[in-house]
Length: 629
Image (cartoon, rainbow, N blue to C red; front, side, top):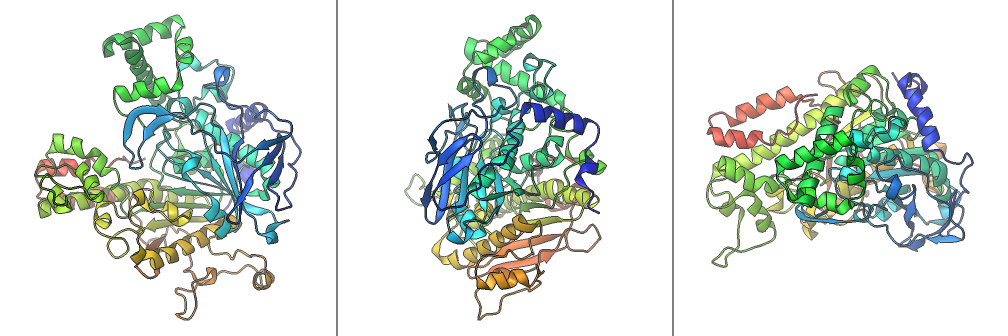
């Protein structure tokens, strides 16, 4: 069912591609190939000196676009300037301007970062066997609601070394600097800038830079996988449906995507809310006066100058001063993002058809629930007693009560009903998430193409992680990142303990193995041949599919004895998703065949809530974040 990519790009897509070629043009020649262990890379724009650490070559703070400052703020990104000599690439770039956010996603009300932030960090194995080998390229787009996060949070050494890939971590404009759809910034002459999708255009620009320059780091420019989690997964899907993404990547990975695209009207409404909060903060006026003032500046043409004269951090802090910060979704402008967003584009077949992995976690909602604790307590009286769900953070930190005794889950959730309500709220919130952003999307994709793979990540609950983490957070949002990406710290720094080391490392090994295979070939089961006599033999014995369901007890787990990850099938009862879990000793991986719809989840939740008081039912339904497509 795979269709040639060229056949999917017609009409406006071709026009958009031509416009992009002009706006984001790169030199036509290839970057100088990397072929030594010396961390000098020769890109189109100049030489870069990185460094070696723990068997990995690393380059940090590599510019892929000109700084979007001054006249380039709220513009489509431009090519970076060339430099003479050898540029130092040993220090990370500053994060893009964003709200200061704690490790548990709590805002402080302050801003941090810089507008000069369009840089990538690059990691590749230093092993001499790869001296003249072009490796698969794994481009990671970080998450954070498209309003926070940076390359600083992602150490690509583990993944690069264990999966034998070139790992590229991309920074991009965030919040109102990245997505701002308003006529005051639209000239009518440049559809890219007029789209308001500056962060999305940064992703395009980064991928074009990778295409033209990654050979200088030993990467294969024609074997690129784009991957991301949460907002990063949203951005991956935007590349899948955007005409501007055509020909820039060969595979895609969407981990726990949970954001949709906005209509132009929704984008404009968010921009106006931002402007009015800014006016309130700068001029110390009421909301009504700010709305009037915003309208006056729109009418008399002074709004653009007002916005450009304001520091980016001031805009961020004004948003936080008068409310929370929204997620920043791409806008369906018709050039960068198709009108109607993902589903119409997929249904039409006019999108970038590549092998793709989609997945979600069993308890996506749980890490968010404590953040909403005060609101749930104030409006719904949940839970009973003196505490809110937010106090579960204190439980995790080992805080004490006034009498000096430890604060426990039973103190915060004093009745069985309170504990059951917390559990089912988290579980069905995640089911809602999965039904919309994994199962429905996978079903639609599978109507158009082969090579659709999905997963359900379950590690972190009882039997794999310690209590109370296993109850409070479990397999929560972003818990899968260290398993796919590598690392030795679990969600919020809690669940990785010596007792579960064997099982979680076994699972991590398997999941990185699947990702390595997928990035190599678009198939998570196809053997990734490494240098060495053993792997040379495997390479000559043809790329084979393995279907072993377990490893013999006398062998360590290896790539050749992972369960076969079968592609999604729309047939009832057929394989759908691979399930990732582990006990304290070994990975527990198997295929599942459940497909759920949002209607299914709604009916399941109604049955689970039957007989509960109205306030408790309302609290549980608050975490059914998403509505059907």
